[in-house]
Length: 440
Image (cartoon, rainbow, N blue to C red):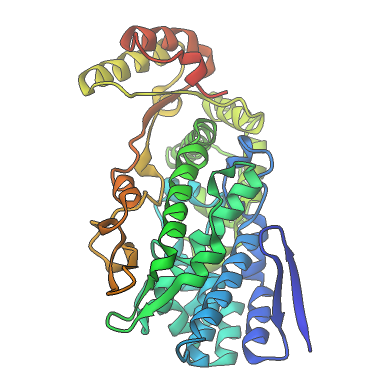
């Protein structure tokens, strides 16, 4: 038996049969330069500034997602026939779902206003990419089928659900992987029991969870909520993102104003700074190292703001932060006064006073009111007379999570922290110690 084996910290052994058409396709996709680029993009962006072990890549995560897709399809195949071409498309989509990510994952999307899924689809469909060539070598229709799954337009619909929904193999992997690599234990849940409980509702052609899986899914939803609160929303992580975004915005605005900003000539990053339209080839050229390389050079910039922000980021001298859990009128007054403190301290508020909202994070907590069915989790209720319903109808935990998590905080230079902390104490006299709350 010919095979390729990957040793994985989460799933242990990921095995691909290279003597079978599906396995040969997946190995060829993994070996493409577009997919290998994911080794150079951090899965958690700047989380390593908070959790030093969070060095894992989009490459490792994508392999984990593929592994879970194969396991889920094996489980579903015990009770229903899945056509080989549908299975190949689903596995390829699971593997490639993140191939369009830019440097530092979601951070760059906020600065440049793009979504990685659009670049993923372009990568799959563009006949000039090695990924497209590998897919077409398997089947001329496969690139379009993979794109349809990623875009959520595929039939049977449950295969697209497995790639992107509230209970998909992407989330199943990243919760366990991010929990392991950060050392935060909040993301642990019973993966094996969820896989065991997955089924397809023939009436709606969608995924649901059998009754025995209710508590495992509740645990999964809680794990995701805890990871957002304790890891993805962490003050230091978000502070690092704020510094990076300010640095890139300053560089872009300087170039737009005709000021000199150093960049490597003839590169995709130069086109990015000059606001030129990026081709697919340009986008796939860039990774985390391009951004870091330029920030290292900008530490010697003639522009004092760009130089200072770059030094702060490279040297991990990040902003401080406080949460604004106060009435709206008091919050608006605090923001106004704090911004003035930053200004009086000699810092341009546009770059040094950043408001941070929970809505800036791509994936909110579970919400059954979302219009698209894929954003609801359906579960079988009852054993004697089972029926399939939306999970919050039978789960107090799911209902409680629909309230979501509201976050509003401000980030600012540590040089003015004493004044802002004092302002905060006056605005919230009964709050916890602000120094304990603030980012470390």
